[in-house]
Amino acid sequence: MKEIDIQDSSVFEEVMKAFEENPVILIQFPDVFGLMAMPNQIGIKGLDETKNRLPGKYYGSVVGRVEKFFGLQEDSERLPFLKGPGDFKLLEGSILRVRIDGPEINSAAVCEGTHQSLLFKEGPIRSLFQKLEEAFEPIADSSLFGGRSFSAPLCTSANISGHENGSIVDLDVVRTFGRQKRIPLLIRSESLPVPGGSFPILTLQKNGISVQRTGPGLEEIKAKFPSEIFLK
Image (cartoon, rainbow, N blue to C red):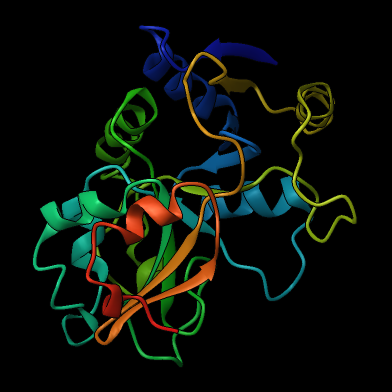
């Protein structure tokens, strides 16, 4: 398994080369390692096999172009305070959960009509996501997103589904995992000044923002909004 730093000038080319060999690669986030895959059935199959996926589990994505993620959300569910893609900058550093269809709709990436995606802050990681989202446009499977056009990379925790130890946070452990699963590439990001801890999870709905999980940076995000926006 090859390793490359997120700030390496050839990281995009190396990722695309790795995807020709395997639909899944490893990526290092602030306090956890993740699996990233192509947004189609090949990517889903790769994630399922890598994780030994249990029933009732769903995959999220990583936001590249905010306007594309903004366009996923149903208009009737849009929070009035977030009037356009530019407003989503206020939510950087969190995982966003939005309703994209009715509660009866499910797929590998949609749970009861909702999809969630990590909105990383602008920088090398986000830049890579943007390039990958563009590159995946011709091969993305819209059926994963209720028929909507969306090509952001799929992403999930790097571990066996339901494992008692949870997500992998140790470099040696993830290296062993990667070799066992024949994953061709690990993107390292230790060179980035990022806070430790799991990202906060926020559900965006028309009457406000609901915190599903707290995490680093949540208070800074809250400070950008009127207090009544965050639901109790």
